[in-house]
Image 1: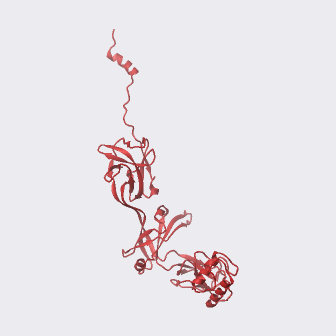
Image 2: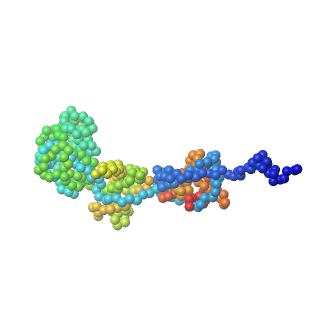
Image 3: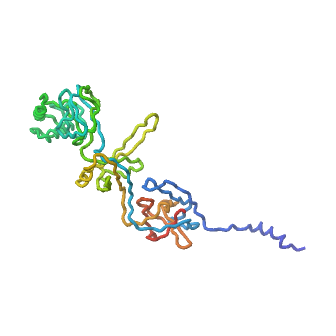
Length: 376
């Protein structure tokens, strides 16, 4: 008796199992949040798990949303509130033993060669320099501190010696003349604690002692600032890239007057935590308003709150896409998903400046108006 078609079907299935439908391999997309934050933007990149060769890879499906490549000027900027005043506050400590007999008043301005305060009725004289004194100076002493002192002595009008690293008899003779003018003992020796160094003229911010109190090495005597107007800004460490010494900034004063200035000092400051709190680190930026226009604009304010705009980078007439359009390719580097009609493909790009949620891109097939995929 012959077999029916229904009876034969199972045999054919065993001999020829059904072939699975083969389609284009899908690209696995995994979120890589924060991968580009160090480059200056808040970024979330898509990592392509099976990107294929170095050429353009076909996308598995059209993206949920799109954006166009735009040509524009990209600026990586940050605006922060700053304090207009006289710059960072420094503390002067005594290096001499004795009794404090005279102190300056808050707001007093003192220049090179003038008395900063008195110990035992003798002046402690302000000189200019970046390092403090640490030993007495006498004939035979050699070193950079000798040269620093001699440069100040020369700037005060005393001569007959060579400004170098050696304290000679000629230096001692000039020192005796200087001491005579100060009405102190003419020893020819600069005792430790009889001069105090600052980077320039100072303005007394406050005093930490009173006349009649003992002076001793390490005792805080007074605090001071510079005499020029300055803006001080505190930045988070994550924004440290914005603060580069010499970089230009825009300062907006209380009456909305804008002046251009430059960053003069960038200092990392660590604040110890109190009562079990964790220490915090901040970046302190000092901007001296020393140009003619800036001085004039700031003259009316002793202390004020101002806005400071930092610019870490600027690129003119570059092609940009939203940062969210950037994907990390499995073969390395970055790319974007270029959409053309009902199809799309992944195209490698070079990423440049990040700013304001945009990123500079360049690469073959990337032009103004090109449509790229973005998350919904």
